Image: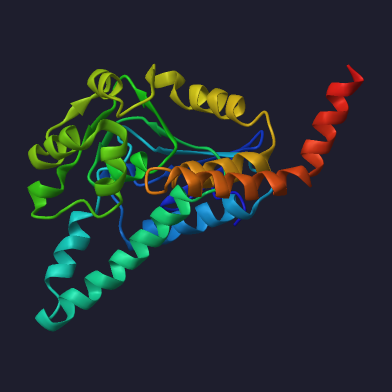
Length: 261
């Protein structure tokens, strides 16, 4: 996928940082099937492009992402009773594929949350490595208000950010969390003025990508598993990853550059 300047998802690369923008501002960037498909294509492109060292996900207009498209939900409910579950299962698999692409990207990912991040929008932000929130941003796990449970990774990612008890409270209440509270409870990592949000995210992305991209990708892959693994298994994976690092040009060049000093 080359740079995309129109459609439900925009994709551009600036100085080795991919910027993926949800682009349905008229519906607060709600995710429908076309958006889900385009987002998957953008993430695949960023993953495969070796010149891309980090990725920023943001939204066009005043919202980051309002969650799933309500009109699409209505269409789902109008299906024949015997087809509702099968259609939902297929849609869930597609959603989880996109979440896996974003969470598993072997490069730093930053959600630049410019406005409301609700439901699936909140999940998309949570599955990024870091969240920079505009002072105008807000977060809500609004699923229960629609008679649903979080299905975009929030059940997994939210407790790891804010702890189990607070995650339950945010999911059960479905309440709105403003930017200041999000920073205080660890739901967001940094705040930025609205007009400086993407610039701040780009600046941070470049700080995070000064070293070896291969070593970073390997470290990220292990870190993302550490809550589920024993210390022994983490050491084992680390040893294997380090053996790979020993063979890379980045390691050799870094050692040679240090010795020349």
